[in-house]
Image (tube, rainbow, N blue to C red; front, side):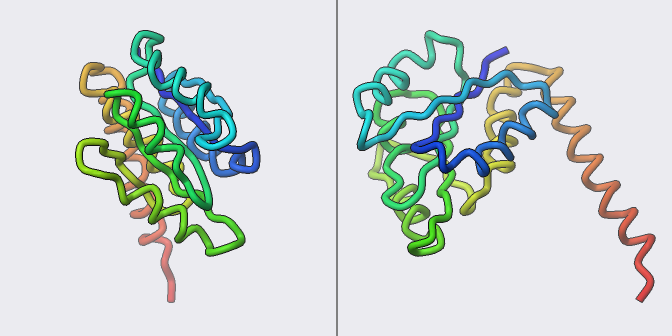
Length: 160
């Protein structure tokens, strides 16, 4: 099975990244996490992106706040699917990161999820990998059904 790369711009992003880790573990999707900054370690970030496919990755999730150029920097150096997770900062509540992540030039796409939307990013990465993995596809369907059951249980328990 292909693995998911989790790339964060700073260790301050770890609480958000953990939500993706938890979801990938629940879905039994292998992953690797790294800290590479688009601005402070551009050589290392580029090297990771350029070799990701040959190193067994099927999708990359990039987490960054503020200027949030990491997803774009990764996407510029690989043809693998890149998912950007804008991370909320104290400055503009993540709006700056959202706009930096979503506004990519034509030809360099980054799929962007909500601010701090790590769980959805993990699910999207798993869905991409599941295109070639029927077992993972079934685990995703089971996870979706479990979520539906949880809502219906709450509906049945509603007493207002």
